[in-house]
Image 1: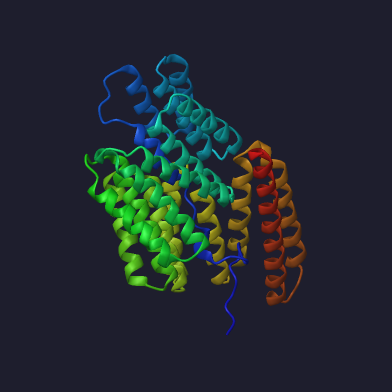
Image 2: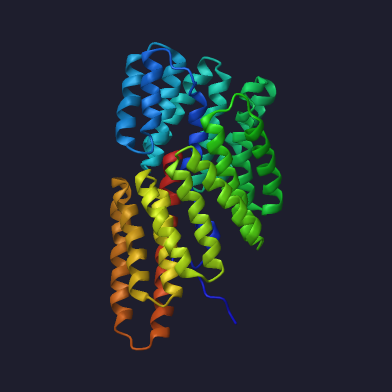
Length: 377
């Protein structure tokens, strides 16, 4: 029997739907010292804490920090903070601008530690917009800096950050066997890092989640469940709603692959609350797409269409520059739904609808890649 395609992404396996902008936080958080002895440290601490609860406030604090300080390193971390905020808000143009300004300043002042952090951020930035060649270039440059300018043991986790993101690229481009070698190296560095940092705990949970996705891809369900649950435990202990949501999305995917779509939906509804709380737009979009798929397999066409449309509308609201193009996508989807709804044969209706959605999604990604390529140039 031929396997059905995913409702929202018929050209790609469902497991690769899961994306997570929060992963770039590992580079930003590396700047954050456990000791905050002055007003600038306290301001930066507040900006970090509001990054995933109120990014607009975090952006204001970042601008304030940049304007009020005369310290170059503080300016660098303020610029990278602003890059991260705008990445969360999916304003890639501003995010790219701030990251590059931060990198220029770090290079001008031979600040190698900051360069490693920024290059890591840019590696993820390029990965998120499907420019993987540039992503590899940034991560390799960061790795070379670590070799040329060795970090003290207390900063060894920075290599873990680079390895974690290289693993993610290998996971997408090659296979999980090779990716797992890098995940395991990163996990070991995070587990053994001294002093214990908040960011290392979060990184560990993120690494566990990605490793679990690899296990799931290889049909190792028990092992995948183990790593998903461990990621959730760590993220819960560190009060990271975004990472809990990310891991729950993976767990929901596990149940969906077992065809327990009701259990998957229950987990996704829990995850949606957390994603909204942490203002992680990418997580929300993934949840809506997964809910659309699940309801399609359950035979609930109305809810499948509702969540598919909702995912496009949420994305269109995230960035004014892209809103016009994505609104056209939504309009085309609605028109196709109206046409297919009039057909009496449900099977024919679903076939037409799937083809329409696949075409619309393909057009959107072509548009987005062209937009981002133009922006990078």
